[in-house]
Image 1: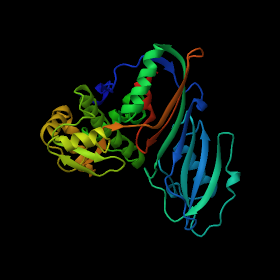
Image 2: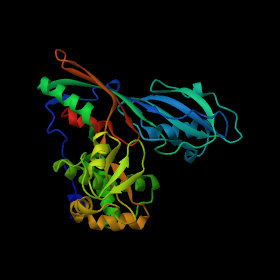
Image 3: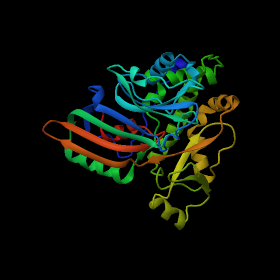
Image 4: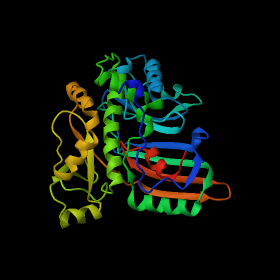
Length: 345
């Protein structure tokens, strides 16, 4: 296989093909995202935490505009996560301004973005340092079985969805994966640190999604396997359950724990028994990727196979053929992974 031959697989659905088709992102207002920081600015220090609303604007581009506005190195502007361009989003940025008086943030404003609030904080905002994201989305031009759609939405509310990395992680036509292959297998050197990180993330995400997809096929993504690494709900801590005894099954049923899949890196797979065998067989064809990821120094980590949207609600207008959906996801989970279970878009 060469980089040019790589294509993004079609990953399994939790409840089968969606019962309807529809259009998303007809306009930026149809896809709204609000970052939930999970902590309050402490009011002191050399950083400013900015809460910014943006429309039809790229996160990285906006960070560069911020750096230019206050005349600092772009490395001194950070954000917790990338947000969709074709959307209306509120997002947090941190700007390091040691010994500099506070700028007039109201001057950093256009029709497409504006500063909602600015407060001092003692620490830089780092990637992933969020509680989660709240989404409000509109799907238009619905076609299909609306009765089955209501049933599907109820299933998602009760059971959750596969915690897939969304398609945006892999780039247009899977281009990020092709670059990852060139890095990891063909030893192509990528000088741009940001791009290098993006391609490595795409590679790990693909391996996770492949395992998650197989777990859906054998219906073990929620019920578990002997030897699974079980993550405590609401945390990143996990333990290995060598056997699925009654206690483990009860904890799974109560959503106290959830099975996980691998984020590849240095170190041995922590899973044992059936879970370990499944992961090894599923990823056997990607053994040449492993060596590259390990050589770069990434550590072996785990990610929950299932995520349950919080406060999941919807409103279906059958006459107008419009569906409105609202929910919250923890940081690192993708709204598009919820949407793909609802509608073919």
